[in-house]
Image (cartoon, rainbow over all chains, first blue to last red; front, side, top):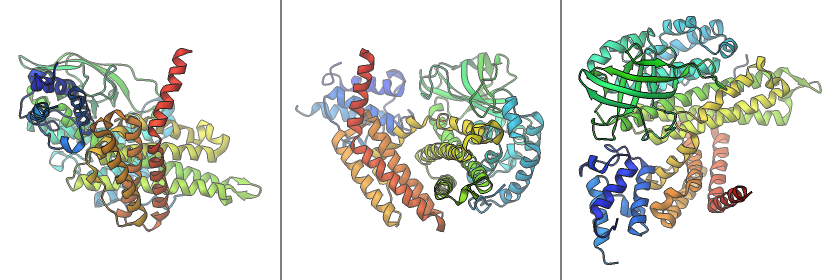
Length: 84
Length: 489
C-alpha cells in the first residue's frame, strides 16, 4: 500500500496487525493502551512499523503524543503531507 | 534449623499477618512433608483442609465475602513463608490469591462475587486461571479459545495449557478471544465453574519441579455460562489480564523470596555443622563469601517485593515494577539455590537433603507468568519510552548509575529512534541495569542499615550491564554469524 496515497488506511492496517484486531474493529477514539492493550513494547513496534512504511526514522519525541487511533492516523497524514 | 538474620517477622506490616505467621510456621513444620508432596506429585487433601482452616484461601478476598481482605504486601509475607516450607503449596495458594481470584474480586458482577467468593475464601473451592495455550505461549493476543454470545449466555470452546490448580479447582478464570464482544478479535475474561457441562480436565503433567502443584490442560467443549460470568467490560480481557499479571508476578516473587530464605537457611545449617580440616565449613573465607552473597541477595529480593507491594497499596501502576521484581527474584532465587547446592557438595545432589528439590522447584519461576527473556525486553522498552522513570535516590553510587543509565537510554533513543524495538539484546541489557537500580533503590527505601554492601554489588551489576550494552550490536552480529555457520554445516 502506498503510504502517501492512503495514509489512514495504511495506519489502520498496521495498527490492526500489531493490536491483533481487524481494521474494521478500530474506532478513532480507541486508546492504544487502555482500549487496544498496547504496552510500551507493542507501541514501539507500531511506531517502528509506521516508520518503515513511511521510510522515515521516527524519533521518540515525535511519537509521544500518539494516544488514540485517530492520533496515529493524523500523525501519519501529517508526515505524508510534508514535502519529501 | 539456623535462622539467618534476614528471617524475621519485621516485614509483616499487617497485624493479622503477624499473628498468623507463627501459627502457620508451626503448622508447616508439624503437618507438611515437602519430600512426600514432591514424591507423590500431589498436595494431600488433608493439607489443603489444614491450610483452609488457617484461612489461607481467603487472604486477599474482601471481609464482606468471608476473606481477610489483606493487602498485597501481607499476602506476599504469607506466600514467602509457605515457600520456605514447600514451593508447591506456595504456588497453589499464591495462584489462588493472585490470578485465580483477583479478577473476580476486582471485576466480577455482584451476583458472581456473592455466589463464589465466600466458597473461595473458605477453601471449599480453589481458584485457577487459564490464559496460556499450546500454540500461543506468552503471546496473549494469539488466543484460539473462543467465547461468543449465544442464547442463554456465553459459549466457550477451546483448550488452555499449563493450568495451575486445574486438577482440583472449582472455578476457572479464563482469557478467551471474543468475536462479537468488543470487536471481531477482542478478548474477554470469563469465569467458568468446573462442573459446567463441557469442561474436561486433562491428566496431571509430569514436571521437573513444584511436582506437588497441579498442572493440567483444561478443555472447554461448548461450555455455556450466564452473562454474569463475564469479568469487566466485554473485549477488555487483555488489558484486565495485564493488571492481574502484575499482582500475580508480585506474589510469585514473594514465593521466590521464601525459596531463597530456605536455601540460605539450609546452607547456613550445613556449613556450620560440616567440618573440614577440623574447622566448620563456615569458617573458611570462600564459604563465608558464598553465604554473604546469598544473604545480601535475599535481603534485596525482600526489599523489591516490599517496594512493589507498597506501590500497589498506594494505588500506583505496578506493571513494570512487578516485572522487575519477578525477573530479579526468580533469577536470584535460582542462583541462591544453586549456591546452596554447591555448598552442600555431593550431598546437595542427593534428594534427601531437600536442596536438589529446592533447585528443581525454583527453575520454573524464570519461565511462567512471563518468561524472563520477554519481560527483560518489555522492561527495557518501557524505560526507553519513558526515561522519567529513572528517579534520584539520594545515594551517591545509585545516582551515578542512574545518570549513566539515563545517558545510555538517551543515546539509544537518539541512535535507533522507535526502531530500538528491533534491538532486543540492547533492550535486555538496559533492563538489567534498570533492575539493579530499582532493587538498589528499594533497599534504601527499606531503611535497611545492613544493605549498603548489597547496594554496592547491585551498582556493580548495573555497570556491568551497561558495559555489555556497549557491545550488544557486536554480540548480536557474532550470534548471527555463528548460527549462519551452523546452518551451512
